[in-house]
Image 1 (cartoon, rainbow, N blue to C red):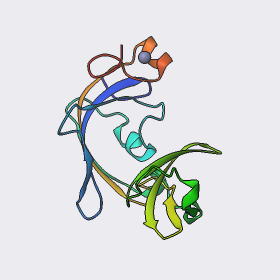
Image 2 (spheres, protein in one colour):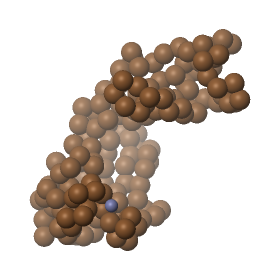
Image 3 (spheres, rainbow, N blue to C red):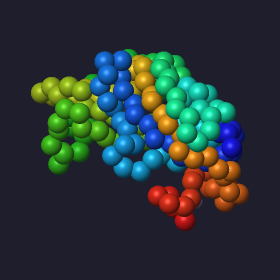
Length: 159
Ligand code: ZN
């Protein structure tokens, strides 16, 4: 069957940036299982997988606007160190979660000064073009329970 809304697709993928550096892949573990058409995947990849079948391979370059969005420099803020938990030893690249107006934000420490710490709440892949190489392993209809829960059940999933 073809990948379309409310099917479960099982895919292997490799994600690289424009320099060919691997960002993520399913090769070292389980394939990715997702429900198609419910916003589980970034839009640029989901569009490309529509209509594909088991055995099909897809290569697609997803621009930031169809991936994790463009960077927003307003999301980079200098925060007084005293507002951060004192027991935490700060390191570059360290991430904090904070409740923002639009939900949970993940903030990355991008600079550490004497009195302030620069935090970046952009998605780590914001502004990055994403090059996906995907092979479809299997496609099946999602069960009613899966659609109700909004996630895939069965092997590697929750029951
Ligand atoms: Zn469930």
